[in-house]
Image (cartoon, rainbow, N blue to C red; front, side, top):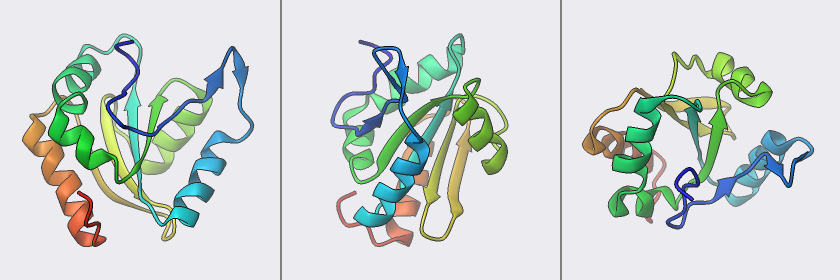
Length: 137
């Protein structure tokens, strides 16, 4: 399915079979802290053509998806309750926005907005990996 970012990502889904999961963001934050991982939040919206471009040309790219395996990857609809709350908290300007977040320090490590070239996303990911000494990316 095109909208699911597969290729080895850990994709945290907020609904399953139509039932909302209890506190999925809190569970993800706790997991990230316990596994000593950063979280990569991807904010999108249903009819966003630029989101489709980022998914097709960036996230589906083998080099990018391999690096993102070092993070917990969370895809959020910016219109959902969880998505809009976190978007306000992180200062997300619109969709698509990619945020790397450190749950231990409760801080945004980096943010990139818009349909940008793969290299721009890789630079953001590589910077976070270097800053946090993540050797797997």
